[in-house]
Each structure stands twice: as C-alpha cells, then as structure tokens.
Length: 428
Ligand SMILES: *Cc1c(COP(=O)(O)O)cnc(C)c1O
Image (cartoon, rainbow, N blue to C red; front, side, top):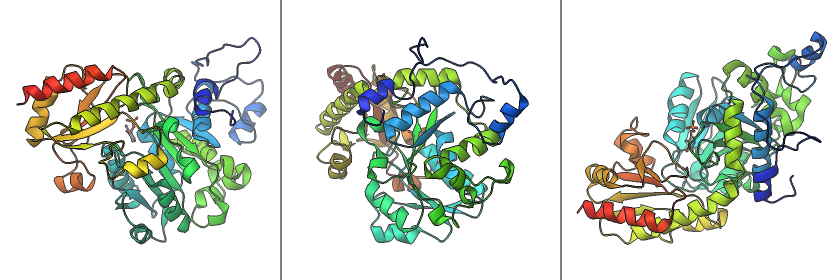
C-alpha cells in the first residue's frame, strides 16, 4: 500500500479481504478470543507471538483501521485510542515518566493544554510552553537535560497557527528527543508531518477523519524512524528491560519500527485501557473512505467564508492560513499547498457580547463544542472549550475573548455566506 496515493489509501489501506471474506472491514464484536491450548495463549502474553486475546489491548477491527491511518500518514505502525485526548496522553506518557519534562507549543487545543500543564504535572512530568513562532534560539533554550519530547499541532485548534514542522523537528532532534505532531486539522490528506521530520503523529479521529460527528476516537502513528537506542539513557522505558513482560527490551526486540506502538499497546493500553470500540472503529473507517473527497470541499468552503468575512465592516479580524493577509500564509503554502482545513476564526466589533448575539442569529451554523464535521458549526472558545484559561493565557494561546471559531462543513458555500450575511445584518 505504501506505493499508492493518499486517496487510494483512504479507500483501501489496512484491510485486504481473504478469498470469500467480507468486503467491508468486519466488526469483531467480541471481548475475547479462543485458543486450543494455554501454551498458545501464553505466547501472546509473553509477546512471543502476535495475536488477539482480549479487546482491551487489541481487536482486529481496530487494528485494520489503525493500519489504514498509519499507511495514510506514511508511518510504520499505528494504534487507535478511545479519544484524541487518550492519543496525546499515550504518545507522551509512552516516553515520559515522573521527573521528566516536555517542550510544547503554547498554541494547542485546550484539552491538550490542560493535559500537559495540569494533569501531566500531577504525574510528575513538567512542561515548558514555547510560541509556535519562537526562534531557533528560543526553542533551544526551552530544552532541559530531562526533556523527553517536543509537542505541537500542525494547524492549531482553535488559534489556526501553523507549525513549522521542519524547524521544530530539527530542534527536537538537536536535543535527542522525538517531535510529536497532532495532525487532527489538516489530516494526512492535506499534510503528512512524518514527511517533514516528525517522529510521532496523533489524531483526534473525532474530527475530519470520522467527519460526521458519529464517534469519539483517537489514533497514534509512529514513523518508526526515531532511534531509541541511540539515546538509550533518555528512554529507559524502551531501552531497558520491562519487568512486567519478563524483562523484554522493546527497542531491541521490536526494532525502531515497532517498539513505540508495541510498548504503548502492551503496557499503556493494558494498564490504562483507553481502547476504542470496534463499532466506533467501523464508523471511523466509513469516514476515512471519503476523507480525500471531503477535505477539498471543507477547504473550499473555509477559504470562501474567510475571504468573504475579511471584507465585512463589523469584522475586525479574520484568521485563516489560506488568506494572503495571514502571517502563516507562506508556511501554510509550503506545508499544505492544497489548503489546510475548513476551520476559520474571526473577531467581531463588540467582543464577547456581539459574538453571542451573532451566533444566536445564525441559522445553518449550529453552536456546538465540535469542529470538523459535515455540518457547519461555531463556538466562542473563551466561554466554552478554553474557559479554564485566564485572559493572559488566552492571549498567549492566540484566542482573544471575542473570537468565534467557525467550522465550515460540506454545505454549499453560497448558502453559508448568505447565513453569515443575515446574522451580521441582525447585529447592526
Ligand atoms: C478535539 C481535539 C483533540 C481532543 O480530541 P477528542 O477526540 O475530543 O478527545 C486533540 N487535539 C486536537 C487538535 C483536537 O482538535
């Protein structure tokens, strides 16, 4: 499958039916798997053979879909998780433990910001946040001897900053650690971070990948390129014996290609259990089959709405990396020449109050804590997803209190613009 283009992978990667087998990925709705002898099963528990024994760890339906996403990202291995939050937790916690430190872009999803700043700190993992626009010197200065990973979002939700992946990857590699990129917004249809040097890619599959608002889920993809043994002292979890598996050393036994995902599955999934249900994985796959057809339409609608908003009197600012006025225009063109996503953000004259009035008047765009599905929706982050942040933190993350985030769906752009026009008119 690695020779095929992205659209072909969206449709067919990850699952090849056997002769006479079901054409569609079967939903294996079973918690357990049967073996003839306990010896057969023992081999699985020792990680001596691969196979299924309990769906908390692995399930064939989920594995087919994970393999498709790994192929789409150009990675070596992948796994599904119960949510995007779990994907980022696993990606970080698979290589960090108490006493460690991570460097993260400050421009990230609110849930991930809380995960890193608050919950990781409770687990003894400290963090330093850097601007996505930080200079190389500023990036270098954020690293400490105990830094184990760098984190960023390819297009940040909701600030829509664009990560200079090559520059962040170079900084991470100068300090001997992997770069983890949350690629939820562009999806591998528009951007494949591994091609630009990222080591690990995460997704909230809840968004465009599912695409229809039907199932919460996440995915982690490993490039298989990070050389854990070359930095063995930094990553003892991968390079020293795991006592909970009879002393196997993941990086030795499974190599760079499979060590990361095998450890995340056999250790973190075993102990934390953030598994995706086979039913959800099935829905996710239906979304993936049309992702390459849907993304260009989301981009077309996002671009049209952003351009239209930019000319309006009541709109003080429009943020969309596809606008020539965006400070991220050049970098977005470099990484995503076909466009990024359908999410646009803008500020209205009159701040929070005006934002609320405007949103109330929209007829097609529903107020939802969601982005990136077929139906257009909008949200005021300061009063919803990001309400844990104070004004200073909001500004640092590029999310002023009066900002509206609008996720352009798959409707006709003329109708979306007409809806915006009547809602603006009602605000006069
Ligand atoms: C939504 C989102 C998440 C969290 O994903 P859930 O599936 O809601 O847990 C993480 N990162 C980004 C960029 C997101 O948009």
